[in-house]
Image (spheres, rainbow over the protein chains, first blue to last red):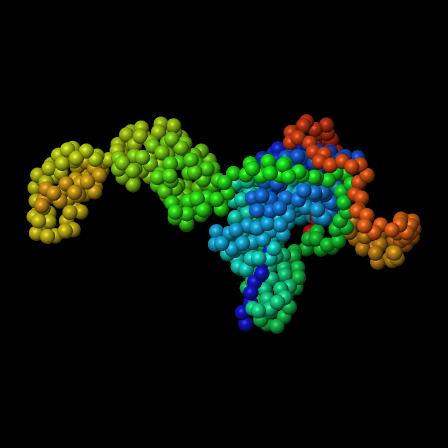
Length: 470
Length: 95
């Protein structure tokens, strides 16, 4: 029997506000001491009251619009109670009954549409580090603003699960609502997977793999769960609904004992925070700040940049903005240069932190177009545009300094060709060519290239040779 | 609404309280009394009345996204915990 997997994903995105969701303390704890970014509000001292960060509301509107979602005019907060040392309050402030972001969808590069059920604002929990017989609590992360994005169960393969998470990551970074640093947990994914016999109207029993922090782990965990659950069903047993953890090292999921065992959160409206009411004007004014999104670029560059190249480049919003500013005739050349650099293993993303200017890129593309630079030389100069030693000098200056400018001057090239043809070691090749041996032209072009120290334009050289040997 | 001993033990579990038999019994009586008292409100007909979450009709109470110096230091906050280690709060191992 064939089994069809069904997957729904919850994604937590940390917002890049300066302060926390409910207190005026530094929200960026990267590289800072434990418990150094904590206010009495985060600490839940008696009598402390939360005050909502307006910037988090604004970013939530942008995030929602990035996913084609309705923004709810009315939203408010609720308390979700649980007892665990990562939350001094004893509850999380979230939006259970009236979330700020309503229904929408995310379109994957493959064209699959994944509907968004809703997304809501909430505070993050603190961080626990476990030791043999005790745990340590760092509250720096308490009430970092999060939006939790809840998808509909519209995903039916591990690959689409991967692509959905990656597309969310792109959307959130293009919208500018998060740093999107996965390694530091800026985005985390909980994945619900079930399988059911093909044609079955009911979904199977699902499991939830919690706290995945890379697209690869999402893909592997889903693959594993699909295979595991299919095997369980094929052997006539039942899948147990449970919360699982994933280990990248073993490549397996395993049951998790967690704070959610007693899922009895006793939600109640948060009495300390008045509701949010957004006017149409506010929503429209904020949404207008959304820049071009991946879907816009896919449409715009479809005829110019190859699909697979574009998908590589789309991971880098700043790079796309730069490409978008280039003259249309140069976009393809520059896009391919970026892709070749990114796909080469030794050059990683941080290479792109300091991008060449539009003027530098345009100058380079022009030289390439006029054949002043061979394709190899173009790439060489392109790489130097990132070089701290060469930065700001411009493509032309760099090309000259490196002696890479191609000789296109016919007179000068003819002179070099004549020198080569006068050499005794080329006589035999010349004779062979005249006798119809087409392929020796390559040898002769090579000799001319050597004589010109690589600066001659090979296609022009070949033309001259053919004329002279005719 | 009837509150039984199981409800009390469940609520105790959720808050990690280790309740003795006597305590559970006393809480059961207290909670039953409280709920009975509050239940008087059930006599009102609230058909078609929107739930009231708050009595002040305030909306959009937001603050600017600006870091303010904190009045309490890390040392002061950590001093309130039972035990600290390496500037963190030390708790019994949970999982």
